[in-house]
Length: 375
Image 1: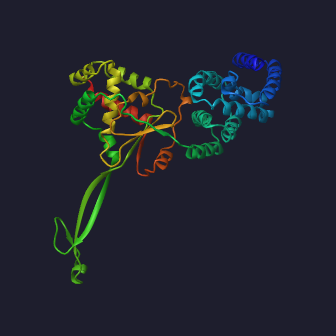
Image 2: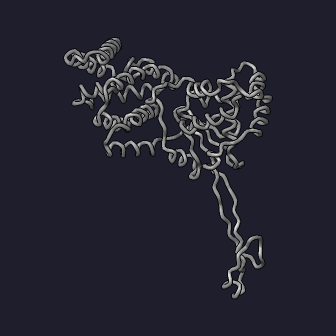
Image 3: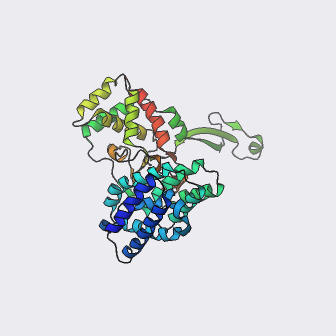
């Protein structure tokens, strides 16, 4: 284990500085030998080598792509053992990924490397599938390969979703909740969002007697059938899926600081003062999500909130536990955030007509909301 740790540390330093092929090759041979010995027996997640994620770097693929199958087996075993402990995966992996992303930014990946990541995707655990897809989604935009984009589209559409249901009402202060409900009743709703949600329906029905603005159909009247056609219109509302997976607390707080320079309306300040141990940003975020939920007009279908790498969700009209909707431990690097196609979310939750709102939509709506509460 110590030999592997030393090799990976040397490799990390060399890949970030000068690519001395001969030195790298010697280290790689030594690392592969030690890794092969290490992989013979069972491995506990706490015994995994540091920095194993650099084996995913484009530099590694470029230098040692000829025998990449050897490294694939090492990566797969490391990843499967690493995924045993979810807490280890969430906490420590975040720091390890920073090095991988620095290496990716340092060398522009080519199509061969990206296709290799697609190949690797098939045999790694869920947490690494998420990371690989996020990397591929970020990098494929500047790639001209139709084949690669087709592969990525298929992977995104088939990405496995098994989120755990959570509650977003934890820690809700009844007094704050009532203040919030009363405030939202007086606020203007977003016309752009209501337009996306509204679903006009036309109803036609034949009657024997004139009804409202009905139109006569002579041929039916002559045959003795109901001949007065009445046409009415109504509006129903589509369900909403709020995809907050990529919505970071930092991005929301930056918007708040940018837009609320002149202060808040007195009613918002009063609500903020009534909540103990809460800063104004937290209160504004809570009211914002409640305002979003108020756009849902179908009482039988509460909004769905999806967050944190698509592994948790909630169904509620009162999402007061906003810390879960804007997690603070997200990284700023775009390669850490995956955005699934809206159709994938609709299919999973069996809501084919739903409107799916993702990070960019939510930040635009936040602008509207902040304009309403600014003094």
